Image 1 (cartoon, rainbow, N blue to C red):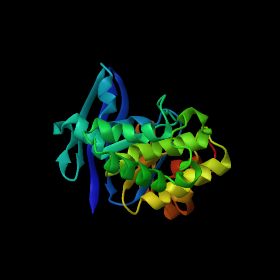
Image 2 (image 1 turned 135 degrees about the horizontal axis):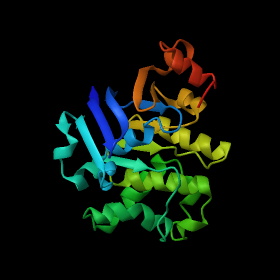
Image 3 (image 1 turned 135 degrees about the vertical axis):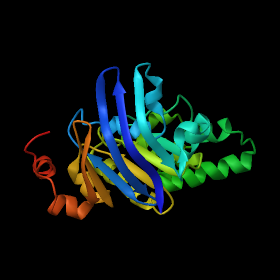
Image 4 (image 1 turned 90 degrees about the vertical axis):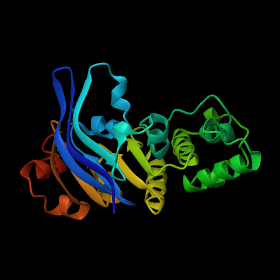
Length: 248
C-alpha cells in the first residue's frame, strides 16, 4: 500500500533548484533509504515530507506530496507533524528528565491522564530499544545519557505521539558503531508498525536496513529500486560510481 505519493516535486530557494521533478512512492511499513553526495537534495526532500522547508522565506515548490492520498499542503500543520515525525542528525533532548522528554509531546497534544502518559512513555522507550537502560533512571536529566542513548530517547519522544511515518535525517552521524547498531536495530523493529524514510551518507547503513534505496544526485532522483538490486546491479552508472566510492 502506498503511504507517501510524491509526484513531480520541484523545490527551489530563490533561483537555486534543490529538487528537480522528483516522482516516487513510499510504501507502508518499509524502510526507504535515501543516499547521495552532499547537495544532492536528500535532506530537502526529507524536510518536504512534513513541510519544514516552508520555514524558509525563499522557498517555492511545485508538484505534490500526498499522505494516504491527501495533499499534505492542505492539512493542518500540527496534525501533519504528529502523523509524520522527524529525528534529526544530532540528538536534541529537552532540559528535562528522561520521562518528561518522552512525555512532552503527549502532553502537548492534550493527554493529561497520568496513567495514560506513563503507559505511552514506557511503550515508546521500549520501541526505541532503550527502556531496559533507563527504566530505573526516569527522573534523571536526559543530559546524563550518552550520545547514543540520547538519540534513542529522541526516537522515543517521536514515537510517543504515535506517528505513522518517521523521518530519519542522518540519525547515526555522530554515533559510535555500537550505538549505531542499536539505532539500526530499533529502525528494523519499528517498520512493523511505521513507515520509515532514512537519509544517510553511510551507504553500508542504507544496505543494512533499507528495503528499497533511492539515489539522489544534484537534485535529481537517479534511480530507486530494491536495496539488493541497487547495491549489486544498479541501472545507472552514476549510482554504481557513488556506491563504489568513485565520487561523493
